Amino acid sequence: MIFDKNNVGAGCGSVEAGGVVFGGNRLVLIAGPCTVESREQMLEIACAVKEAGATMLRGGAFKPRSSPYAFQGLCEKGLDILAEARTRTGLPVVTEVLETAHLPTVAAIADMVQVGSRNMHNSVLLRAVGACGKPVLLKRGMCATIQEYLLAAEYVLDAGTRQVVLCERGIRTFETATRFTLDLSAVPLLKERTWLPVIVDPSHGTGLASLVPAMSRAAVACGADGVMMEVHGHPEQALCDGEQSETPEMFYRVVRELRAIAEAVGRTV
Image 1 (spheres, one colour):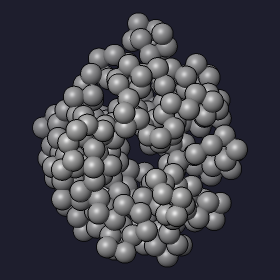
Image 2 (cartoon, rainbow, N blue to C red; image 1 turned 60 degrees about the vertical axis):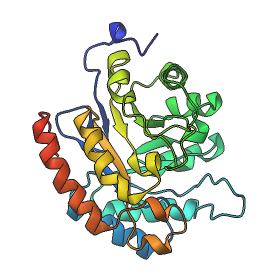
Image 3 (tube, rainbow, N blue to C red; image 1 turned 135 degrees about the vertical axis):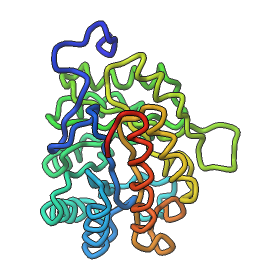
């Protein structure tokens, strides 16, 4: 299998996206809102997270939502705003693609294409993103086992790319106190079974902004190559996932805390 460490060739083990290296000594900090709501909102947050220490910008232009009546994103307009935010801040952009029809449009703007939890089992989309020519951020499905997750990664790799980053974002269990159960044991386990970089999304993994700092510190301590956090200037007004979003001030404090944890495990932020 391609994800078997025995099959790793020269130069593997790290992934580069827009000048940012996943899997190196420096941790990757991805931050931004769940969804692009407006030009003003996105530019404000992009500048704030850049100043705080983020190395990559996230933001959803196309949004998969449980309810058909919820905000579905600004679509192509959202991509244009993300491109402007990248120009303004210099931060490379990662954003989600929902279907193969959107892929050329998303790949033309994004520095890294994200496949979300709901699409981890979509083999047609996995093959398409693997052949699109852009690095891929593959999130673990909310009900996926480690083996199922690795096989999803195999679909992407089998399409021709070796530029894949795995993201643990929590799985659905019987627990209801948090949105999902953040499986941090997946980080060292995935690193045992694959050469792919692994990051953690504690925002989706817990669903509670108050828990994100502690779980971010834990993610770095257990060996994650980066952390992906949702940050919003006014979480109480967010159109999507406000309850799990950090304010820019909170994000700044988290970055400062992560520097100390990173140093303790021989990494940098």
